[in-house]
Image (cartoon, rainbow, N blue to C red; front, side):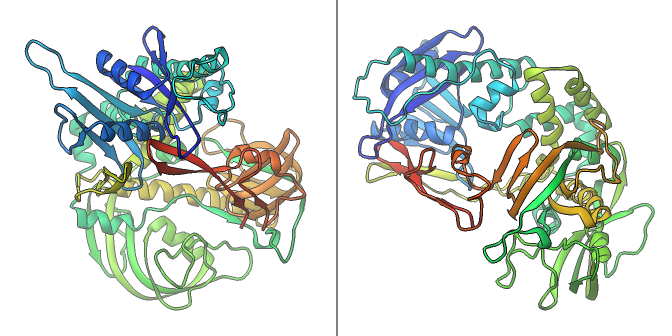
Length: 558
């Protein structure tokens, strides 16, 4: 296994690799060169797995070069002068396998595989170095400086390349020592869980469903709860500055839910009409048609209407304009009844489940212990295992991906043939996320008069005195006091600024951290535009001849 990295030009009329590095993960031997042809020769000669951090970028240069010199893309195992890819419908790169020469009994194959460490460690290279407490930290170079073809790397450039490869190599070595071998941290987490309970028991507890049933149950699977208090929301018409507040985060929200809540297992049973209490199958997913209006007083909107021309799918509605069809877990259904006046026109029916507490007890206990007793990389991996498993249950069985093709000397992507795989068990993901939302929303309801903002597992409150909630620095499910702020402005979901005791905290969806240097409390408002000419401007990938260039573009707070 090698940690690999490309450095590339930023001119779309001269797009190429001007430097490459590859570091052996076992012994940290470092190799480098100044063109992609030499890299491919090195990779074919050494074989094995080359791990890039953000394969969608570096892999674009590899695929462009392969097409240029006559390789063909295949959906099968690649033979001589062929390559295969695993690219999602959303354009995420997972794997590229390349064969220059198929082996014989006398001669070995000349082939190698590229995978993406970003799917294993979902952080930037700099963040990995810090989180893993590595001695090596990320360096800096001028990315826009012109480097001619055949450019000899300076010591500064070589040091920068070495650092990037070394950081990922050290992280991969720690990962390998844990016996992790899958393409993503979610797959590794699921594999670890299955080993914990055995394959036989797993297959019995989480049976494969037919795609039609999965599709119906999937409608109840939703994400976190992110909401800004209407009273304290800053808009173009009314700027609102909040003085003196506090921030609390839930300790290990999803592991807490998985450890303590009544969760589904086994084959669901369909029922017609309204659910009737069944002690053998006490939790359910219901389908119904209703009209809802937010109750007056201390209540929160919890409903979102997706795929409708009448509602904004990312916003929580106060009332429905007409009757709407919803699919909800009983957790979300009960939360809705507590916050809305509801007129149900029809209960279509739903699916009910056997349920129990403790399905993940051994798994959560094992990784929690490692998290509590470890430092650096092993602790990071433990946190990833604790927070990645639930999402794997929600994996969509429709895995239709994209395939590369070559047109006008530019590599492009198009949708491949439809591909369906076995379901995992989406009801588990639906109920875990439902319980997590309930935990945050009901806690927010208990401090309604002080509520400012929440985001999945965090609460931002008016005032600095401790609220009457379960507060503890590390116990699962309790709220940890993250700090106080002197003033804050909340613009919309995932967009706010707080002047904390420890420094300014900027959260701005869609805005790269490199732009935060241009954002301050005075200008952090709706309508702020940071142009493509500012230092650290937002970069948009553009496919061109040779690979990809990152084009500066403007960012606006909407």
